[in-house]
Image (cartoon, rainbow, N blue to C red; front, side):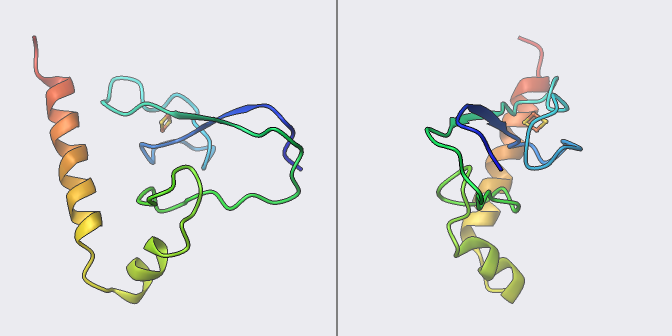
Length: 93
Ligand code: FES
């Protein structure tokens, strides 16, 4: 049961409390995604692949493409953007 309150979705994939942030992102370019629920909910479909188009929720398409091994340009682009952000965060200003 999820209560009506704020949550922090892990966007970096390093949290040991998936899909929620445990602050393992610190020192990286990633930030958790804050989302809230207005009502109590029995079930949530949160994204586990981190590539959904509707973060933090599963879009029902992206993970199926990954599992099916389909060519997936969105995943490649997201990976490249994350690498650039990571490099920018590590570059001294
Ligand atoms: S631990 Fe992944 S975003 Fe915070």
